Image (tube, rainbow, N blue to C red; front, side):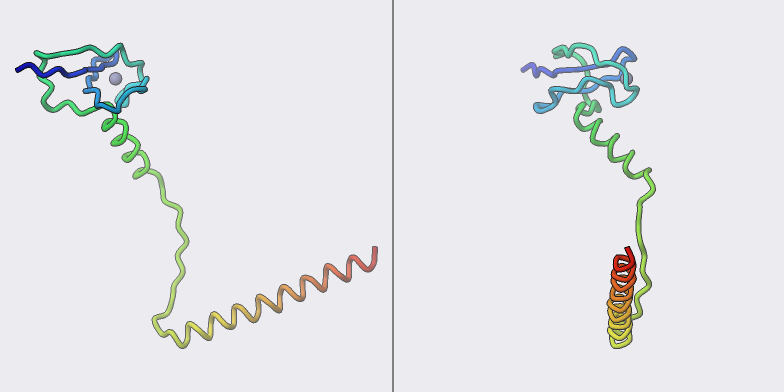
Length: 112
Ligand SMILES: [Zn+2]
């Protein structure tokens, strides 16, 4: 029994299988060159060829792993009582700060 495989390759001979949902890829994930028209192959050894969709997913994954991740880290004490007090202090002073900033705005508006 012959099994047909659809093969797609770029002009630099990077070859991929076409998966069932792999329509619409225009560029080679290896080199970025245009992909040639897909062709049907029965004889070719397609073992080890990944699909074009998988190749693109792996490339994108590798790229996102290389990007520096943005993060904010906050040191939190394990003592929850202390943490609560600190959070309350932050909330209190934030409210006081907001009041003071409002007051400055109102004063300046009054002098216009
Ligand atoms: Zn290529």
